[in-house]
Amino acid sequence: MKKNAYKKIGIILVIVVAIFSFLEMKYKFSAKLNPKLAGAVFSPNDKELVSLGKEIYFANCGSCHGANLEGEPNWQNPNENGLMPAPPHDENGHTWHHTDKMLFDITKYGFGKIANLQGYKTNMPIYENVLSDEKIIAVLSYIKSTWPDKIKQQHDKRNADSVAAN
Image (cartoon, rainbow, N blue to C red; front, top):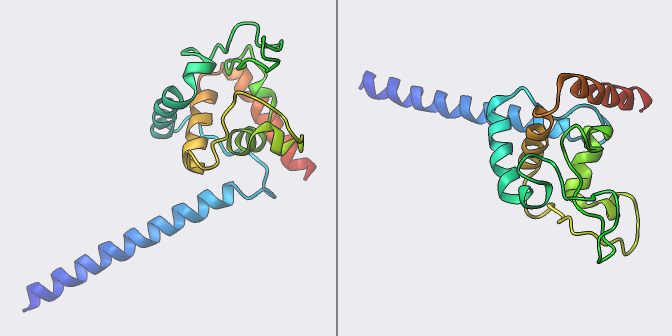
């Protein structure tokens, strides 16, 4: 009888710890996405997150932004349809010029919505109902993980300056 009681208590403890761990992770994650925080959200040194992000990138982004994050040719000029080609996400593009929050918002909601541009047209899909917030952050963490240290430091400074301005 004692063995059964200890076994039940053990199972209950495991469940309780799992629930609290999940809630803590969810709380920390949602706190990172709080628009008032506006600071760094990406984790380019988190190998597990970056690995997930790389996988998601190649499944959803790589066909336009390139296998090496090089973007489409002539990306700074409208194409024959009048739309802007996919920009590079490597250090040669402008991705790192934007804060984590802005990059997250562009990916999730689209540039037209966050810039309040009615009728803005783009080939870039809106991922709001396609990828979870965690998956978007994983992709953007993967992208940042590929940048040279100097570019990462400049990007980190942009995030810090953004927080200081709020």
